Length: 113
Length: 110
Image (cartoon, rainbow over all chains, first blue to last red; front, side, top):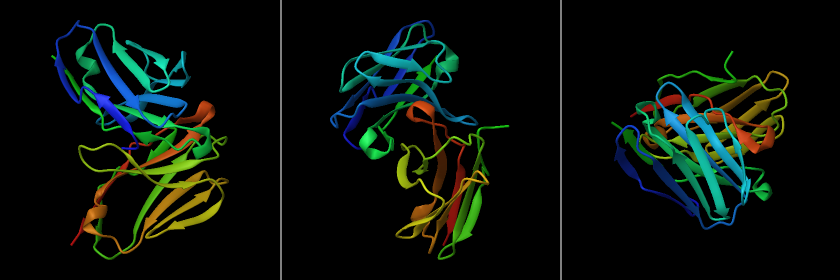
């Protein structure tokens, strides 16, 4: 998985609780991305980062926030989890020298009850 | 109109035959295109990238790009049961973002 880890790999949480997912890379790549994948919707971009402290929204950013204080770590926070945020979450990384090819982490399966 | 369209399948191909996967996209500004393979319960894996019109071959895989028609395809020769997976087409859009199709589920029958 191209030096990318995600934690936790599985999580069950209750509606209304905050949840933070972590993506950690050892490749020193500049760009990092958070996606969610749901049946019938495919992969959708939540937020991305183009450098430390530089982030931007994707197409499904409502209810999510991100932070990147170090090159290697990109955190995704669900401020108050809802059942609609039950999904599989993938982190990806890329670098300009790779023509922006993206490489994915193993994913986190999140269930909000 | 969806930004990236793929036939969801399932596409069933006999072992040893050629599997042909198609993708159309709406953003004429896209210059780079990727194909990912995703096994059930796993993360997407990059298998091909293509940037210029024409064909690009890598082993049993050939990617084809026609920017005028906004069409990209993936051919898998000598299909193997291990090729059974969902294949995702992803053009690059502005700010180095990928837009994914919903994927085509491919089944190779022994």
